[in-house]
Figure 1 (cartoon, rainbow, N blue to C red):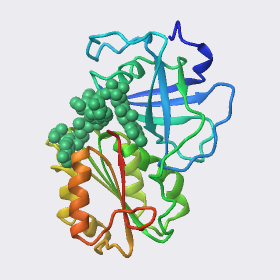
Figure 2: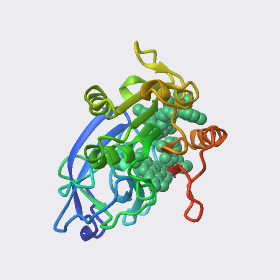
Figure 3: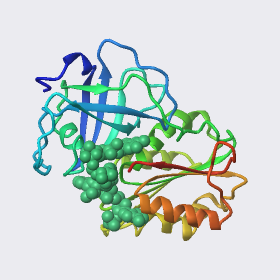
Length: 271
Ligand SMILES: Cc1cc2nc3c(=O)[nH]c(=O)nc-3n(C[C@H](O)[C@H](O)[C@H](O)COP(=O)(O)OP(=O)(O)OC[C@H]3O[C@@H](n4cnc5c(N)ncnc54)[C@H](O)[C@@H]3O)c2cc1C
Ligand SMILES: NC(=O)c1ccc[n+]([C@@H]2O[C@H](COP(=O)([O-])OP(=O)(O)OC[C@H]3O[C@@H](n4cnc5c(N)ncnc54)[C@H](OP(=O)(O)O)[C@@H]3O)[C@@H](O)[C@H]2O)c1
């Protein structure tokens, strides 16, 4: 897989690969000869492959081939529970012209990959009071950190309300839909609100994810309006959505969370 690069750097093995839609995958990687460290739900790991690794045929041809020995590395939010000690899971979208994702998409079960042995990031529930409700808003693979938060925290906090608002183009781009719908069907405190920008599926909302907030869908689900006193809001995905949603939330009295000025809006920027 990585013929020239130092083989010792490829310290993890792909243990599962789930094709959600063309250009959208869930990957699981297991450490090879080391133990996964503790991490907080919402944090990210770094994945890497050598320039010599092959690219998926779904991607664009590279104009200039990268150094075959150089390891191309990028951060990816972890979607597995922080209680899971066997593997780390990722939810990844293909950037056809990109450097790393076309190579990650060419991986099969059993292939080796670089995976960082420390996990970082401040996009966690660390500064959120345990009694606070959560509205988790995302587009595309921005859903990944929330899947980890839900898998890690939901069972422990059955009294906290969760609302997951997820925007995708088509119904087949709604990764984790079955898992999130099942939680919503079984637990009164858990709401899953997907919205499609290009699909016209019966029963699904059509539009951008911001509209679910501005049109009061969370309030309809919960029976009460979320306020800065009882709710923290997380945003992850398209930069324009983050900006627009932050403005809308600020107009509703929510404030961006900063280390020295605590607030209720938490933002993770993928690009
Ligand atoms: C903290 C953090 C967590 C991240 N977690 C995830 C994750 O869970 N899943 C995931 O798929 N990506 C995630 N990313 C993005 C990831 O790190 C890479 O940027 C992405 O996979 C593109 O890498 P590439 O080498 O293929 O493209 P590159 O060669 O690096 O560049 C491609 C271009 O695409 C832009 N770009 C990056 N991501 C997107 C996107 N989703 N849509 C449109 N344009 C984009 C970049 O700004 C760049 O201009 C995360 C980024 C950060 C900073
Ligand atoms: N199956 C896939 O999702 C897939 C497959 C292959 C490649 N890609 C490529 O990978 C890149 C990123 O894909 P992705 O899954 O991260 O995200 P994405 O599919 O580009 O976007 C996810 C959702 O966010 C919406 N969106 C865009 N701008 C927004 C805004 N300002 N406010 C609110 N919502 C907004 C998109 O709507 P609209 O795009 O309809 O405006 C879409 O419904 C894109 O370049 C895409 O072409 C995606």
